[in-house]
Image 1 (tube, rainbow, N blue to C red):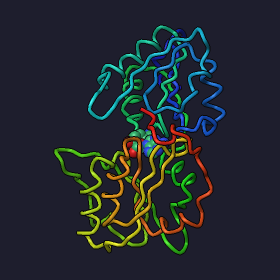
Image 2 (cartoon, protein in one colour; image 1 turned 180 degrees about the vertical axis):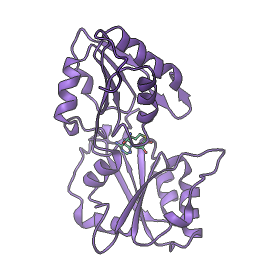
Image 3 (cartoon, rainbow, N blue to C red; image 1 turned 120 degrees about the vertical axis):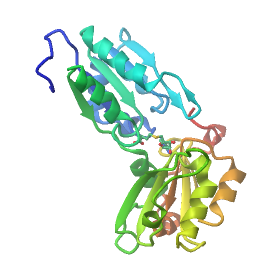
Length: 265
Ligand code: SAH
């Protein structure tokens, strides 16, 4: 509970991370709250089957975003949560992965705070953790990486405006969210800022699901390999020598059916 202005009839908003895609990576807490919710406001990157946990009589509102197609403007969405809570509803705002990692969760609850709406945040398994685990790429390892950086590779004006000298370091792992569209630029900049062209790098598409695909290569050859394979969103780029462990540590065998090649959007 976060504000003294809250009236007894105002509902609470639960900002919930639904994990990276595999349904049973959802937390028990998230599952319980989904079953209790009067209204669920959800994005497109949520696990298949997650809405089946929602009560049949509860209101479901899709506000999915795709990079070039913002279904509901953020401002409007923030106010929608306020309105639903003021109707006295128990509202679940469901997001992919973790709500505080590239999920705009902070912006949404800032608005709730301003309007005196009570809220709680339920963490989820973020895509980097889920993809790394299911691909067999430990994000840190005593022999390879003492640090891991999560960064957005989302293109603004055709360039990725990042602190390249800080990212292009040997003893760390860098995970790019939303980076597939900018993969040429990302790999080029990592090499230009000092990493060897043969530094290991991977892409994980639809991580943790039966449609997971993992491509491993190096900075020089990854973009070509990704294009040849037709990788689309959602996918993560992982750069670091930990990627070299993947061949040994991969354990997850997604089904080799035709659905393996499709993506989740
Ligand atoms: N809040 C989310 C991230 C939202 S940004 C989280 O914590 O995971 C959306 C980006 O996350 C996608 O563009 C992609 O880079 C990544 N992503 C989400 N789910 C993924 C998955 N199953 N496999 C690979 N990447 C994924």
